[in-house]
Image (cartoon, rainbow, N blue to C red):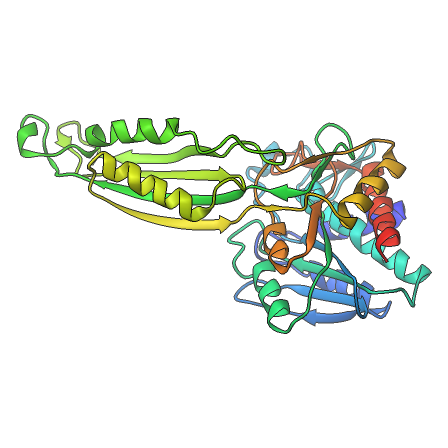
Amino acid sequence: MQTQIIELARQLIQRPSISPDDQGCQHIIAERLQTLGFQLEWLPFGDTLNLWATHGTGSPCIAFAGHTDVVPVGDENQWQYPPFAAHLDDDLLYGRGAADMKGSLAAMVVAAEQFVRQNPDHHGKIGLLITSDEEAAAKDGTVKVVETLMARGERIDYCVVGEPSSTQQLGDVIKNGRRGSITATLYIEGVQGHVAYPHLADNPVHKALPFLQALTAYQWDQGNAYFPPTSLQIANIQAGTGSNNVIPGELYVQFNLRYSTEVDDQIIQATVAELLEQHGLRYRIHWQLSGEPFLTAQGKLVEAAVAAVQEITSITPALETGGGTSDGRFIAQMGAEVVEFGPLNRTIHKVNECVDIHDLAKCGDIYHRILTKLL
């Protein structure tokens, strides 16, 4: 299985599929799956290409979810090897997307292929949900596919997302949930004026400082057994015209919260509004909800994934919910059990992104074993 996985991973990495441009990656996968009897459904939305490929019928439906798009490479001169050369060196496969997540996507495809060859009349349905906009806006990809499936009453029971979950060694972490993410774009209104005549102006920076102190010190929750406490970080702040003798008329602040299941987006918005009112500020605010938290605390999928990792790596994985968001947040809305498992994440989005080819082979074995346990 390792040779097949590495060959497919290299083919995918060699396509410069900067989000959301798939660059033909999904067609490479589709051609392979079609020869094994997978039913292909192309679901393009906007500038995003999506593929829903299925084999078998009925329930349960276990899906592998992944994305073919990658983040920009940055300065190519800083790379040891060209970022889309898919260069192999000392058991490491280099290239943009090697770890996030063309390597694990290749392992998923090959594992599904092998399972179907061995079990052509298998119970239930195997699906591969592949998008090309996970790294960008994430508005025309998995979220739209999920809406389409739900609208026609099609469900996914179990879903493995191939995000690189491992931290120190393959198999040490399975993500069984993710925190919610919501961003506020806030404008504190003041009155512009000359710094020598402050009585004729109203400095929004000065007025906002007590509010910002209260906002960053606010204790949202203590977290719980599955989630760390909700955290807030100011990401951008700006005021002024660039001149040293002008009091600004407006302060721009952008902040993001990664929140646990102890709160929800409505509580967050109401609390921020209350703090703003308490400090007597005139303001405008816009909220963008990127995703609600989801959790697969226990169930058949978690049990199968943990057992598969133990059997292949001899490691008992920790179940964690930290890190950023993933497309798992959309699939969880279907009522599906969702976990994320993949190779090491230490080089993702970095120069010289790479993945161990032996780890990819083990990922393939783990994905195959999960299928065997659930179907």
